[in-house]
Image: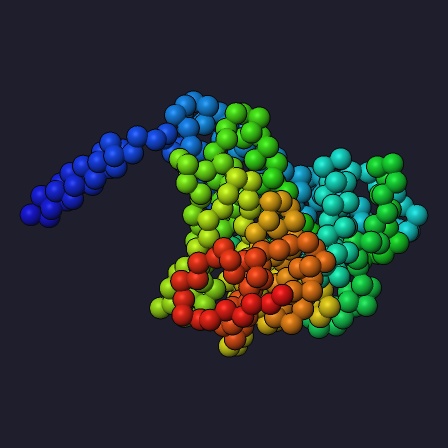
Length: 358
Ligand code: ADP
Ligand code: MG
């Protein structure tokens, strides 16, 4: 009886699939999931040439792996080695070298950090390390609030991206507390790079989605790519809807979300998460999630983190300074804030009335 039922179900499923394929005369959708960059990455390529799609995904996959090691703050790649030199530096006149890809990460993020009034600050690697959210997947992980004195000491040293000087590929700093963590930036830079690899491989229609941080090329068989945005309230209340909004993305557009539900720990009734407010040294308060739409994934990544830290009062001002037009912020008290441009495009799947902020 059970087996019969399963066979029936399978037959139905196969018929359904065949029907879908027959009904859709358009190009095939080639999809693959990679585990790289510390996360699951979904790649969708619209193509009739599965060989071409597979080849492109192989190149992307090894490039993601390579960049993950190179740009990881603690692995033995280029950035890990540079961070070790920062730690070991005996005087502020020490100079270091690093490959061009790391130098470019530093330079590009210096500008964005400045525009964000230092709320996006990759120079707080030591502070981020104290919180240990990168260890959360480890079997022996145990949450601990860092020693407040250590937090205070780091805040007093006030490490900023502007404390790093680059001259003819030589790096120096006069701030002994500098350690670089590009956790809020590297994924955006990498996705931008993967998209240019796809274009080089003559792929014009694709989506790369790293757990809700994504960029699209072209369309999905002539239709805009339709994307769902996670409802942050679901972390606190599992009966909430999983998706809070939907939006259609056009060629070259990118959508990044920073949320307090990505890496977090509930401890003594409080929610501790991985986005740190460089002004306090503690997880940023006031925001549940920020979604940014732009055409540049690196900017979107940095801005979503900066606006998360900025919170309900300051986000609109910082968004203007960072030149991002499309923003949605969901605050701790479940208010939805939108820029006018975002209000025009987003489809909210909730009864909450948004606050539109110019
Ligand atoms: P996700 O990587 O989950 O999408 P973000 O892009 O917001 O989220 O990046 C969060 C990561 O960035 C943290 O895990 C940490 O490595 C680093 N980080 C935390 N706070 C800041 C900050 N204020 N500025 C820059 N980087 C940060
Ligand atoms: Mg980010």
